Image 1 (cartoon, rainbow, N blue to C red):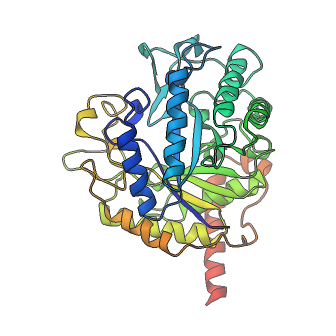
Image 2 (image 1 turned 30 degrees about the horizontal axis):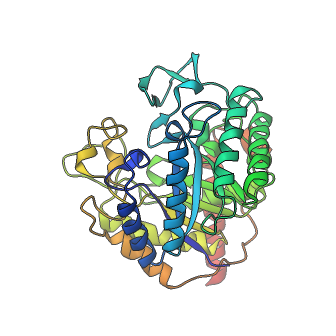
Image 3 (image 1 turned 45 degrees about the vertical axis):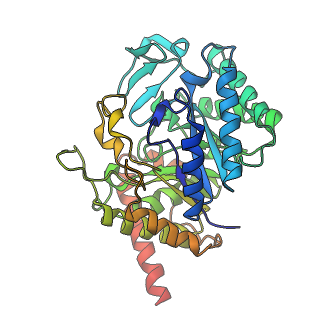
Length: 394
């Protein structure tokens, strides 16, 4: 099995408005360029408020556009990881207005619906009831439309979905996952996974990968050194492998690391966290890929394809999060950054997935019981184990 190397995709000219400002020509050009770099996969996102305007209706035009994108992915010789119920993206919760609960404030992330900004957050979408029934309807419609499409690698149940709302109990999240897994298996017979992220491991969000990932062929994880409190510095290339190993140990599954990267420094912009210059980004990318491959993980997807066009700077999410415009492997003018060359160089090696070494981490229950200190303690043990492995190899 090849170590999968991919990129998260929004077009640079439309970003999160991709489905409303649909430009098949731009998408075809981008996918051809991604394939020319030697990458084999793209992860793209179905903005929930675009696709499901009513609980029992999935927009027919959006389904047609989805199929067109899947066809373009296949045309480019790539595989796709479509992410459903999106949901959380780049510091905004994009939600259909009918999902909101007036007793729930928007909280840490602002809510934007098809009607604009809203003060409310989503209802408890994990529990049996109308919200979950609506998600099943969405999953069936999308799964049926791409039932056996050759481009689809797997379905991804949401992007960092715990940022929409935390489950009240771990069994609620497990039930939600199992319900949608069943719906997609009937509709499409394609594999399913779910977009978990570092905060699901460093915080107790009442979400357990051991139960959430039951039935998945693989788990996924997202992580960024500059967003991780336990990182030794902004260039710490062990953060991502550590999160991957935690996820693999707790889920009992191999891990596809579907988001890694860091924000690029931008002239005249002061950020509330560290950033990397373009050369640092390329070096960081290579070091992380080397480590994930050595640990037997399934692959890694860079966040993200492109820096976004200047014309979008006053639109959400960039109006309040300008750093989100500069994670790409290509600049807003379409020229390639050094990190694109780093990914291409790694891709040319066409590495196979290795047999994973014995895990350096331990039991899920004891880890969560020891939070908040557990992450730092287990990371220190992880680093010591990595050094021991290296010493043994010398």
